[in-house]
Length: 295
Ligand code: GUN
View (cartoon, rainbow, N blue to C red):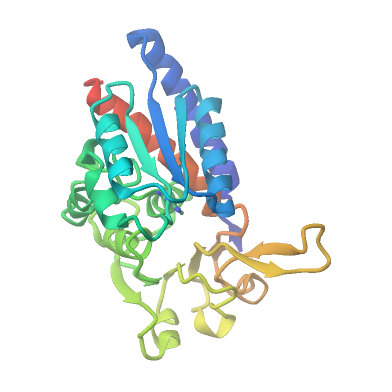
């Protein structure tokens, strides 16, 4: 069984991005800038935002984090986004989700200029993805990272049956639509399963490529997987484990112990899809910089 090593691929990618940033800096005197807005004090979001800022700096981009209190009015957030839309030093804007309940997440998504929407959440970017214009949009970072992994590991996808479990706007929907496109690492027959699907194992057992984005620890068990399948695990679930120092550990949506003997290739958790997400965010930011500067 092949372990698809997202940690290694993300390191390779970050080194490639760092070299590109240095090269563009030498040519233009400018560097890409990413601004992340965090509203409130959600601990998981704080960790994500800190990691995004740290990685951004490591590869030579300008990272700006705007912290706003949990009771921020929606109008204030939207006004800030409009200022960033008009700031030529800002190439990527990301508003960390989830947002406090007085703020309409969709209104925030719509406010971000699609040409700086490095999350790929704006309907214009999602629509362009669905229409196959990947060179003229931003792809949501988690599905984009999975595509990068499939490509770099030369996973055969053409004509294969890809089953995506999960239908979120961030992962499931863009993922399924990507796998449908006529590209090198896609070109699949695609099935989407979700919480109302009857008999999920009936579908997952037919998957040549199984992508699990459910958010439930160990949901995909060995009896749900076709022997030889490629299994991509998007889940990051905390489960209690008194044997660890923190009292918990991270597991995926796939029962790794059970499934690994029958899969042909798998992404581990941690170290699979997760590390790719930030790398793809920075790839999107570089791409925005290239487009805005005509490079
Ligand atoms: N919260 C969890 N993942 C993400 C992400 O990829 N982008 C944003 N904006 N918020 C998130």
